[in-house]
Image (tube, rainbow, N blue to C red):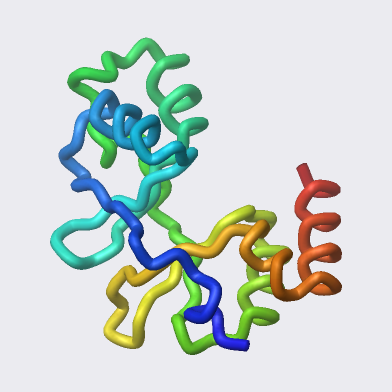
Length: 137
């Protein structure tokens, strides 16, 4: 099964210039814990709720003036939309991540898949993936 068959395709992206307050509000609005950061139509990073707390708030930075680019993770783990679900699960297991961004072959962001999405279609694969990620944490 291809990852595009199970991905969520309506992924919201924010600019690297968005304030952390904007990022947090968007997370709240979407009920998510991370936001991809895009410069135009190119993925350049991600910001998690943990990034905001650890890299900004705990350091005493003002969330009104601190930007997404200041706290984002630049190394983004992705797979292509025509990759197999098992390959995506393996990459998630190797990197100890709970969600993975999906790009098309033009390297444009087209979706996201969580461990929960994989668990709905690949019980054996997701069980091992979830176990390994939880163990690493």
